[in-house]
Length: 196
Picture 1 (tube, rainbow, N blue to C red):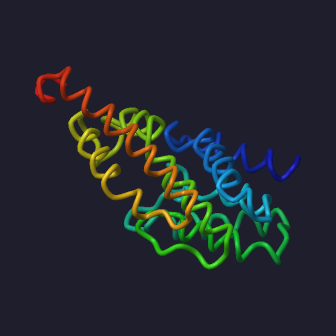
Picture 2: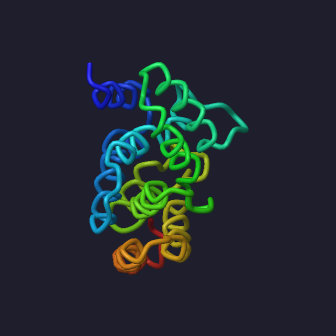
């Protein structure tokens, strides 16, 4: 079995909510590639990092009181060592996984920086909205549609400033505008969100 297929099977068999599943991982990978197309980044590092960056939040791996990027890093190290993954690339993969969250400082390698921007972008725009609303009642921070609206507002305000690359910043601003247009329309159609 190829390394890619094995990683995809790990994600698909994890019991993770679809908002964090295989399509999220593939979008992050493709977005990181697109954002960095002017560079010669290692696509294997990007792919493996994208597939494993959220494993620490998956039900079969999550531990309470452990931040998921750190848990994901440990899980990835174990998985990749068992797969005899290229040891010279392992440190970059682990750097990318550990630093992928918007509240983290960007990682040390270019692959980590672009993976982080791609993950931030997946929380913005139309895809960010559908991911937030799909988690209503499934996430402790998003119990109601009103919670999803508030989280979307927070993301629209904060996340564009968290991107590190010029391409990431440009796209984050566009996706922020998508979110704000949607939220304004939703507010109009629900009597200032009262009838949400």
